[in-house]
Image 1: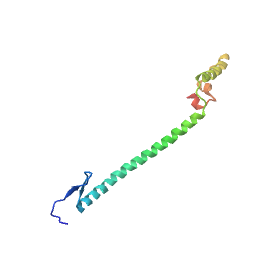
Image 2: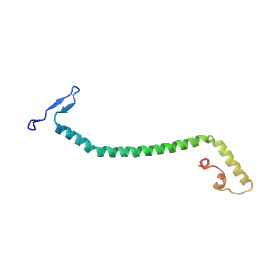
Image 3: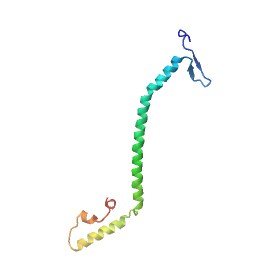
Length: 111
């Protein structure tokens, strides 16, 4: 190959260019190899993000499945139970703390 002649660039039928020089192929390979660390760092970030999303999804799905096992929320039922507890104390003239009112209840019911 004659190193003094200029590089000859031709085009494929689809319009993309190719070079008929080994130097250009080497430069192309070098540029791809130089870009690998950037690509691997980006891939690592995506992998970490995918793991975090997967963990979050599993947690949410577990919580939703657990919630589906509970009975539906009924404000009137809660109201009746609380008023009944309060009325027993009020008949005796006693004061009842919030802790006493919610004692024996599940924490998701109290919240």
